[in-house]
Amino acid sequence: MAVIFVVMSFSTEVNAISKKKDKKTNWSSFDFSDLAKGKIPGPVKKRYSDVKRVFIADVVINQQVFSKYSKTSYGGLGHGSSKAKMEANLGGIDFGTYQNAVAEIYERIAQIYTELGYEVVSDAEVMATELYKNKESGKRIVAANASEVEPVRYGDGGLNKLVSVRPANKLVVYNDAKKDVLTKGGAPWKVYFKLANELDALVVGYSFNASFVDMSGKGGYFSTSAKVKATPYLSIYNGNLITLAPSTKTTQPTTGSFYQTEPLEGNNDGWISPDGFKTIDESESSYYWTGSANKKVENVMMVNPIPFVEEVSSITTGLADALTHQFISGIE
Image 1 (cartoon, helix red, strand yellow):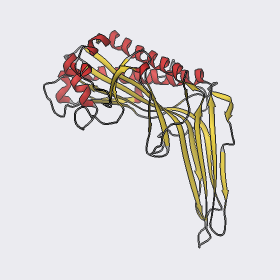
Image 2 (cartoon, one colour):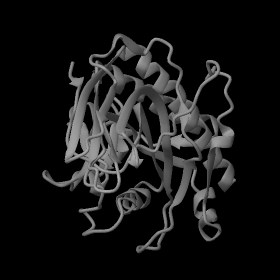
Image 3 (cartoon, helix red, strand yellow):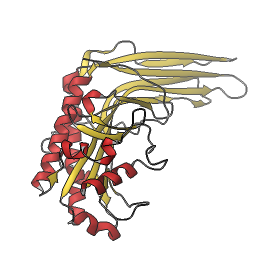
Image 4 (cartoon, helix red, strand yellow):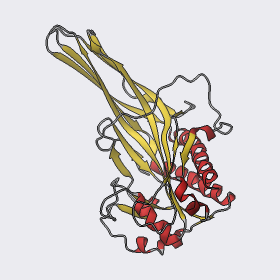
């Protein structure tokens, strides 16, 4: 099985907020409902409420696998500067384990829709659509068994790298270019809109982000040194549900959007490997009267794959449940 290490380049900082936990959170009894917000715009509510079929187009966890951070100290009055840098890589994650876990989240979402009275559209029906039959090799719209496609690796602008993990043995439809090339530009929801009309079904896509490390540091003016620290930090953040309904409106269809209101910090139960960070987790540079001094530390944070993925799955499943119920309650 493949192992996640580092991937490509990136940009904005991970949105997870470092918090101090006093005790373990029991996710099986945790109330996720207050963390899900969103709405279907009033003018299109009837289109949603009239349809009792749903296609789950995508369920994805974007796993952070690399992070970097730096701080600079400036002595002031021409006395030079110093800079400390930190890089951290995620090691030990097994893709097969992760994909199977996401498949279980997919199944739970399908179960919720069934319990709420919806028919879940089959893979065979999706494969019979014109959109699926006419997909071209080389296009960035992927409609395939998630187990058979290369995981999407991307950067958020420079500070982080992520790998998108999708469910094993499930048909998914997603855009790995972050834009809709099949419809000559525009947002990815245009593909979902086509599917909604072809299938006469609601089309939904779920995405979540997962972190493994938190970076912090100090520096600034009139400081004698810069310091950066990397701390193991599992969190789920930026959970999102996008929805489309069939419509005769062919341009700019209105989407429903539901989102996670704040990040959730995971428990540290066993997911950090005894190896932990393979090198020291602190980078400090001393202040120099002339010129500058840089100190850079690179870490590999090893995790125990099964406890790590179980913790991510427990939180993500609860959020997916809350987002789904928020969506359905908003159209009934």
